[in-house]
Amino acid sequence: MVGLPGRGKTFLCNKLVCYLSWLGHTTKLFNVGSYRRLQRGEHEVQDAAFFAHENEKGKETRQRALHAALEDLQDYLAAEGQVAIFDATNTTEERRRLLVQRFHGKYQYIFIESICTDQGVLEANYRFKMRYSPDYQNMDEDKAVEDFRQRIRNYEEVYEPITDRNLHYIKLIDMVTGRAHLDINRISGYIPGKIVFFLMQVCKAGMTQKRKIWLTRHGESIFNTQGLIGGDSSLSEKGWDFARALPEALLHRIPMTSEAPAVPVSVWTSTLKRTIESASHLPFPKLRWKALDEIHAGSYDGCTYAQIANTSPEEYQARQMDKLRYRYPAGESYLDVIQRLEPVIIELEREKESVCIVGHQAVLRALYGYFAAVPLQDIPTLEVPLHHLIELQPKADGTMQVERIPVHLDAFSSGHSLSQKNIGRRLDPVQLPFGASHASSDALESPGHTDPLPPSGDRSDYLSPGPVSQPSQEMHGSVSESKGMHHDDGGDRKVSGASLAGAGCSH
Picture 1 (cartoon, rainbow, N blue to C red):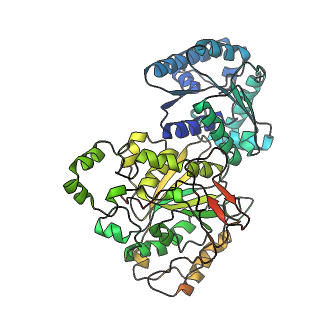
Picture 2 (cartoon, rainbow, N blue to C red):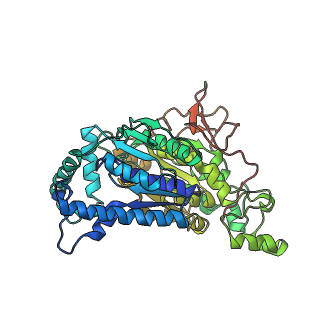
Picture 3 (cartoon, helix red, strand yellow):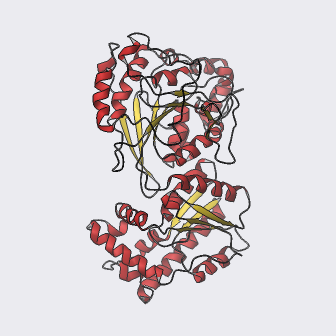
């Protein structure tokens, strides 16, 4: 990384670690600031003066931290690593020459330089950074920001932006504003190409957007009650209770902004009945993704795990030994699911509004694994229980704050939904945030399509859900540019995803 402090470098680093690790490329972050803090003496103060270029003692400490981080980085690459991310300012040509000399002929390198010229955005970034930076713990925010500004001025005195066209680099200009442009120089290869593509998507939304992502499994299905995997069954009575309770659980969690009453919300579901029915009472625009369908159980679709263990003990044991890589006969593995979910992740990273994904266990495990930087091997065993919301709120450093919220069904167990009057009262403070960005405002009702009706009760008792858009019949397994969503001449939303026959496993 290259750039002055407060320019979103750590944000980008954490995002890249999540993305590349999730795709299966062993990736590790080496933050020189962490090594610097380890070098700090018992009574040493690493305030702005510590970073002045004339402070010889400070320079010596920073050099030790630099070389300690580089040693660990090279040991990691030599032993097991595929990608190492070196998070530091690297603001001088001398420092960058040292890095090139260290890696030339051994590893492929890329410099990623982050530049921001928007003072309003920078000020917001500084204050966000104060909330998680170990350098400013237990310090008054205004004093911390002032010290941080002085630290930046010290770096500005020696800062030399990248100008050498012989270097391999990606230069992000005003990335954190969401109005970025990129300068890409001498970039080639699969992983570097994936990095460029990913950074282009992250740039669309910027890093200071106030939004949330909610992940929730569909309500209990009829197949769930019978212990069957896969299929396309409808909800059980308890599942319908969840569908009626979900709006009440979600509406109180919608983030507010100073510019508008609330951050707009859209709802994404799979194309299977149990997710569509579970989302049917949510008063927001809806989008169906084929890519969000459950893992395809192949030949075992509609079976119980006990039946698989009895009839195909070798297959059952193979799955128990390696759930990540095990592929159902004529079906999918978790790695297959992750591959087809990449367009969904890309669109979520581009998104500026809040999104509620009503999905399936394996799919939500994979999505949560990405955002929480869960090791691939652990993704198939993540706990994603029925009738819970997992709330993800982006933090300024590119990580996620996670909260798990149970959805209480007691008030809805008799088949009564939240009335339109009560929903209106709860939505009044946020003025029905039906979605205003590219991801929901233009969605149109598909001709001839109606939402599934609840098994009992009068449809007029429910606030009409937002418009539903159908996915295109032609699906694509991956994207090479921003194709996650687009409009055709009729205005319907079309979604890229993997075209897969059959339904998926619910467990």
